[in-house]
Every structure is written in C-alpha cells, then in structure tokens.
Length: 134
Image (cartoon, rainbow, N blue to C red):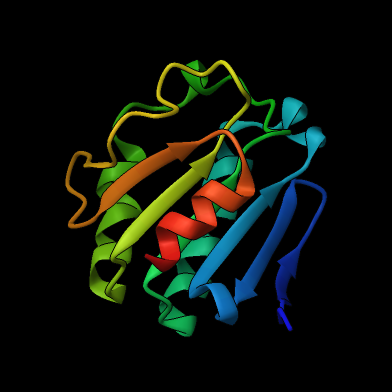
C-alpha cells in the first residue's frame, strides 16, 4: 500500500513525503498563476527543508497545474540557493511531470547546472515514478 504524508500545504501547493516511491514531491496548485517571485522562493526553500529532513534520494515536481510565469524569476537563484541543498541532502534523481507536448518529455535525463543528479521530464506520473524507483 502506498503511504503518503503531507509535510506542508498552502495555497500554492502541497509538499508530500512518498517513502514507498523514495521521493519528496511538490504538487503545485493552479493558484500558482498568481504566484510572485518571493512566494516561489519561500515555497522552494520549504521544499528544500523537507528534502533535507526526509533524506529521500528522489525529488518529484508535479507541474501539471503550475501557472506562474517563470520568465519573471531572477536567473540563477535556484541554482545558487536550492540545488546545493539538494546536493548536500544526497538527492540522486529529480523528475518533473509536465503537460503533454512539452519538448523535454522523452529526452534522456541529464544533469543540469550545478546539480549532482540527473533531471528527467515526464508526461505522466507513472513514468516519472518508474524512473525514480529504477
């Protein structure tokens, strides 16, 4: 039986511990269409706290409802402030579930920026979880 524990929840999304899948997940809500940069930063910092506390080897982002315009984010902030925390926590794989039609779906997972782990992009949850468990 799959166990899921909610670690944090607010209007932007839920942070879930999925021990059976060996990952900590962000499940973004549609309200992210109204999200500002500071809101995004605070949420990612909370997620990094949870990744560090849980020590799971996988990270999962369900971005199917993510609506924020990421072009408004300060370039490099995540690479400088969040990715090193994932590296220190022992992250081994990171997966995004993105809407069908995104060009990255189906490309081989690869290391991005300062990450010590590969990131994969998937069009559905089952493919993402299969890769994280592999």
